[in-house]
Amino acid sequence: AVRRYADEWTVSIRDVTPLAHEIHALVNGGDLDPATRLLPQERPYPIGDELLAHLRG
Image (cartoon, rainbow, N blue to C red; front, side, top):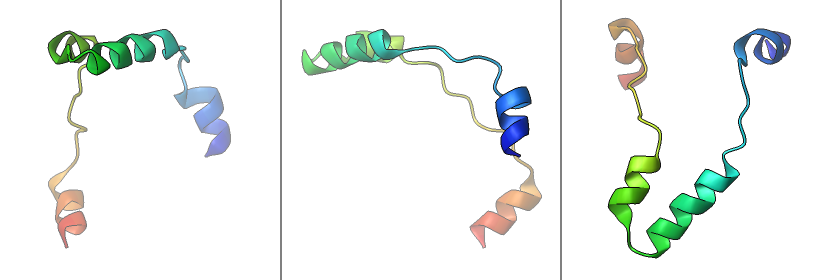
């Protein structure tokens, strides 16, 4: 699994340190709306009902 993760599943690596610093500065300054707009859009992970039922117990 480690080899597949490193060689196949990882398609890119990007340094987001400057972006994190910018968001942090905005949050510290109370500018939450601009900070929120800089965050990546979150998407629900597609998951089947069978797995959800198992996880819910």
